[in-house]
Image (tube, rainbow over all chains, first blue to last red; front, side, top):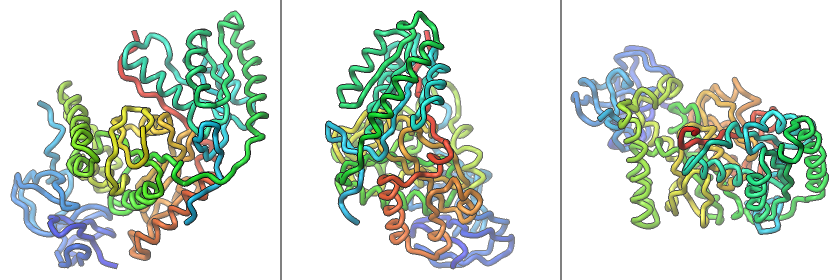
Length: 92
Length: 386
């Protein structure tokens, strides 16, 4: 069993299939096969960045846009509400 | 898989997977009496609306649609309607009776506002319905008669990764056999509406999908409220879901991959077969009552960490793919899909097992929620009481 699953070849993130400790090398399988080093603890089911994403750029999972980077994201970062924000449902 | 299952064939051709006698309170003023009647008569299911007066326009219409829809769900052999005024009762009763469902009524009007007398009369009428319904027998019914609502509640990353796609595979099989799937929760199409619209059977249906999402998205904004504070919820965020788009992309997988044949209003029965989407609330209890009022005989309900809520009228099959959830909640989770997450089984094989489980449940296997009495129905309101 791999450590994290990339769901689409366009995805910027993979989903951790088990809890990953900071500094661990994470083996990614699925629609992308690669390894990244976790820069933070990543709970099971949470997202790990496969590549760098510039602040304000789209973040993809399922091959679709799930929001934008609130700040620069580096490969191996935990991607969650602290650095990823919805583009939708905003106050007008 | 065979094309038939043992179900209850109703006079108008609808098929039930259960043979309930429903004790339905149609007005909050008679709610306590309704519950007394249900508690006194074995083998009944009780639902009592807290509302029923001071409702106007779309709010009154949707309340009535939910009451009529619940009582005429194919799982209901007979319904005792408990109300306040004779006129409102008769109006709803005649609509329910038109479907062929046995209907009895009892009103506070008939008993000089004496709720004890109402209870006594209701017990006698419900008892007679149970006796008559007990003569019904299961017989071979077409699989295509199944109408299944698909729901998720307390989602986490395993929902979008495994449980929802699993339900989607089963949804496709049901549709391919001529059955009907209803996917609700408009807010959870937000960010995935282009995928649903792309699958719409006509351009009008595609537009109806995106319009429904736009209305749902505009409502909190019009109140100056940021949607992000409300959805994804706490359990979702703990489970690794960060945005509504991410949650939606996982959620719509429950609908499978077949064309979208129409956009239904809350509780509105589909006019044909295939996959339909229901423009309704994201709050699971209300959403599920919408499906059941639209005639769904079964509900497939996915969850990450667990969620005990079930429909009272339609058996609700709980599915989780989180490796720990089924072990923690062995008398809640009806189907454990965690072998997919563990990499121990192919999703297609697990989907076949889930389909078998759905057919067994349609044929009479009880869900944990039925056994433990977790069922309820929750009525959607569309406006304030006058």
